[in-house]
Each structure stands twice: as structure tokens, then as C-alpha cells.
Image (cartoon, rainbow, N blue to C red; front, side, top):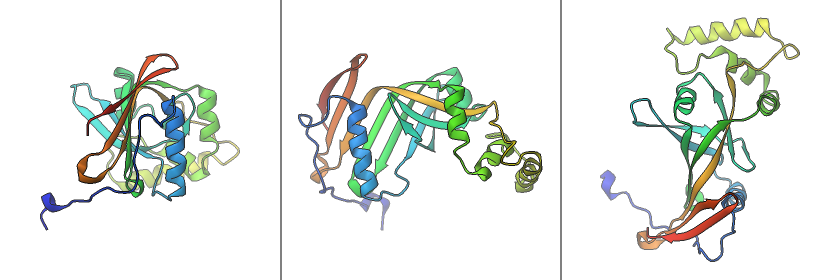
Length: 211
């Protein structure tokens, strides 16, 4: 089969701009709960898009770890995405939940969360993941797999579960969205798209977009 022949007609649900909540955060939480109930695989997986120094886009999958006034994720601050966010603190997030034929896209400013918040999450992780945060010089060239395994062994000898601490260059970010789009697949490619645009803090303009 040719790739261009791959086609699915979306028929599960609809989305009406008159029925969404006033806040995109609240609307996201509703959809996220529905995705959980639908047992979407890796429901909190999202594409994080940043801007490279040369102006080109750069995307990868990361995991959402919290939603409050913003969207929280964690990484190594010295990684490629960490450096890009330091140079250009804006990003886009994309969620795709095929089981519900839904997509959510967000754009906003990104900043580091507090050290206390990063500590709280870091110490909630399994011990092996804590060691992994120390063992990997994320995004840096390494000679081979053995390099990582040797690092892990040394760090397990250095830190037990009682003496473990969070690396200074590892922690969380919070994206405060200024635009949020909810996309619901519909038949004949006439999809439903509802865009929230922040007008003032806590105030949003809601529009339907053509598919």
C-alpha cells in the first residue's frame, strides 16, 4: 500500500465552541480524564518543540508530570532542550490521543519551577531513575553504552537511597500557555478546532477555526 493511500475517517466525537469551559486548563483536564478512562497509551506523552540557536525548530517526546496554572515537565537543564529553553524561553506542546481522535496544541512561555518543587518530584521517582539522572550527561556524545553502565555502577556505590540528592542541573519547567487549541477529528476531514487565545491574565478569547 502507498503511504498516500493511508486514510482514516474520524467519527467518534464532536467539539462545539459553545460547550467548552471558559478556561483551557479546565478543558484540558476534562479531556485528559477522558483519555485516562479510554486507556490511551502513554496518555501524558507530549511533543515538546523548542527553537535552536540557528532558528530551526527542534522537537522530541517528553512526559507531562503536572498541571496547575501551567504544564510541568522535567529534564536535564544542560541537555539540548534545556539550553534551547535558556536561550529562547518559549515552546510548543502537542498531545495526540488517537483512541479519542483528539489533539491538543499549546504555545507559551517556559520557566524553571522552584528547587523545592523539583526536589519533591525527584524524590518521588524510583531510586533507579534518580541514579539515571546523575549517570547520563544528556545530549552529550559518549563513547559507547558501557560508559553509561559504568557511570550507573559508580553512582550506585556513591549514593544509596538515604544519601541521594538531586543533581543541580536536573529539574522542572512550567509552560504558561498563551494559546491552546483543541482538535477533534470529524468525518470528511471537516474537523472541529477550538482555539483559546489569552487576552488578559485569566481571560481567554474562544474561536472556532476552519479545519
